[in-house]
Length: 119
Image (cartoon, rainbow, N blue to C red):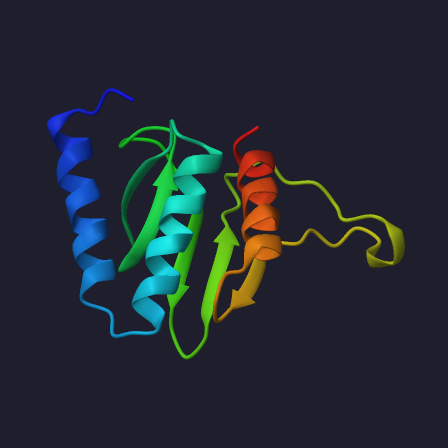
């Protein structure tokens, strides 16, 4: 992945934001960052509304993000590839998930969500 100096600056800001978080959330946020980039290596991290966001380029809209509020959450923006869940959910489109830790199953689901969002 080729990174411009702007991309490198943005990545540093994201990593600094994660590093300033207290444990155990710091480890969960660091792993979430890694899982997102493993699932979609071309995404460019940057700070978005004060938290890590990921876009196809520094100048394009954020597609995936995560937050550290009262609860930690993973979300996809309205600019991501969205589709209704179907089934009993009708036309509802899933766009956010809470988490407090990541295990193998959660990491696999996050990777699926990220790949679908950037498709």
